[in-house]
Length: 272
Image (cartoon, rainbow, N blue to C red; front, side, top):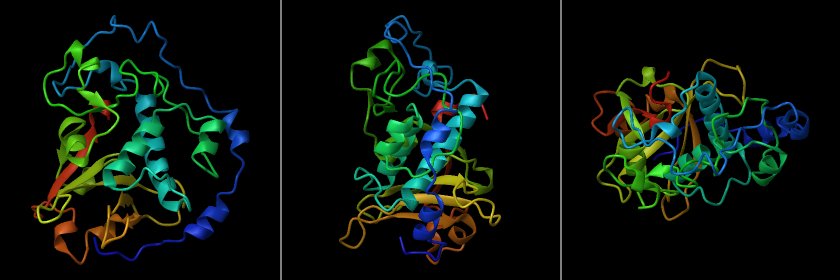
């Protein structure tokens, strides 16, 4: 994608985020982890929406859904502002997998240090479980189509890796082609058939948690993927700029056939 003008002030923002995490970590509720007994075959393998996602993974509690959205978007923005983003983030799907997985972890001081986070807001943790202690272990993403079955725990239906198309088809559900209906943590998907990697996704952040209420902009964060022979980069763009992108195929508009729409995680299905 062609670079857009944006408020790219990483150095000044990073300097402003040099706050001690330890002080807030002690105040933050710890996520309840799944015990070995809870992770046994005794869990109910139900799928209320027929999307291949087990109900035991869905965040049925409203506070957990809000925590997911808050952590997921914060981690995506943090990766953009970081001077040393994780090496694993090499394309748009990798950024999404990283933010999703780390959202579901227990957020303690050791975790923050490992991610080189200079600031972590005192947000509640997800209480239902914490990665990788889930009923599916570390296999967070559905990677094989089909109806949910108990054998999916061990037959390769779930894995740690999912590309952009698997994220769209098997782990999220369509909401709208109107970007105004996006909520923080939703994904914007595109299909550009002329590119080597035709499927592309952006994280809809909404208002920034890092730069504060300095303006009324809403934001997306994405990784370009390998670009012009280079490794590419993480970018952060205001939605108002994206709607005026110099290449119409990147505008999130209903009349753009390359824009597949706004998608929401199956993990959040059944809630708001």
